Image (cartoon, rainbow, N blue to C red):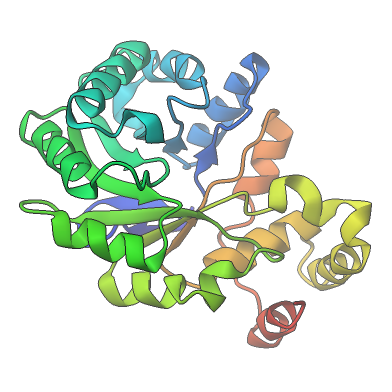
Length: 265
């Protein structure tokens, strides 16, 4: 497994993490498989209602997991952030969250109020790092400016072969320049990249993968992490699917193949 630095911290995280949106009870075995293969980054959220499943993994070895979760957009008032964090800690059965993220921006609540609560949680040892999710460049800058004692270390956004907004919006470039890690969710387009609706793209990814002995999904994931400064967090509900995801790292696409994929859209 390859690792990269989280934001401007000394923290190392795997380039292929594990998402838990729509994770089922039987997906817990997949998380165990991921950890055994070196992927210790698990991302969840109070909104997903999967923290209870992640808790089972944490009971088996808290030190083996870098745990990221998120506070919902309707809990961004100061007191609500504190309560939401305490609730997540209780559900997860841990004392400290490694990365606590603002799930979505809420225009009706000042980001300065939310950030103040997040920094309070850091000072109390309840969270270690602060991140955001689904923030635009403008919103990310506002969050950065509101910080007093901490830094924004990550922005979790949708990014895949078929979802290129991070590139066109300037988000990828901005995060790279600011040493903010991009956490790419739905890096396989929630499976749509591999569906008949994207038959041409799927066929092209398969053709490229055949040169490396890799699947279309593995090529799509490797393309994401080849950008640098990016952690992909695909979800897997089976050990075999998890193994396939993890095997998307540890090798590199040729520059010409990256260029071909870049030209898909």
